[in-house]
Image 1 (cartoon, one colour):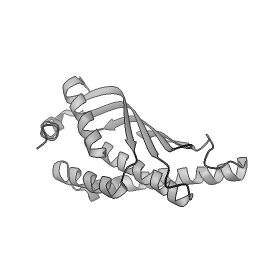
Image 2 (spheres, one colour; image 1 turned 135 degrees about the vertical axis):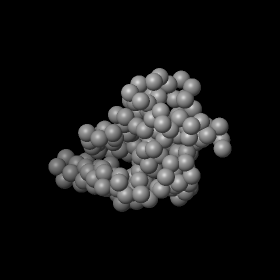
Image 3 (tube, one colour; image 1 turned 180 degrees about the vertical axis):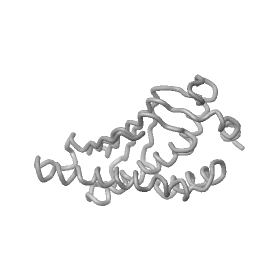
Length: 180
């Protein structure tokens, strides 16, 4: 699902994007990832990354601290809301902010388990696959660690203000969207 969404977005950028600051870009994108299979998503993202971009583990090691920070902040919000506001996973206050590319993450426990993510800017080829995989892992961690109903639908909605790839990646993007 993640890789399929990445390919669709790369195709949109390739054919409809504008050139800006050494990138090709589209703005105001929305992506949906519903009921992701964490193992399948992990395999597909690792395969995409290793085949077209570089070593997945090397890139992940650079991002791991950031993802650990976001995960810890999110888990803290559950405890903070429970302690100070006597609110559970249905609280609208389970939201974190960051000055990095992933600007906000909010969890809403309703008829489905919702994760709403706002990304200020994203390199769709080199970083978005990792960010989306992080989101899949995060909502899974929330459901498991907070003992939420695993049978509920899981919905991840991602809003991206600037979705782009760098011009030096144009040939790789073309190979990916052509299905090779």
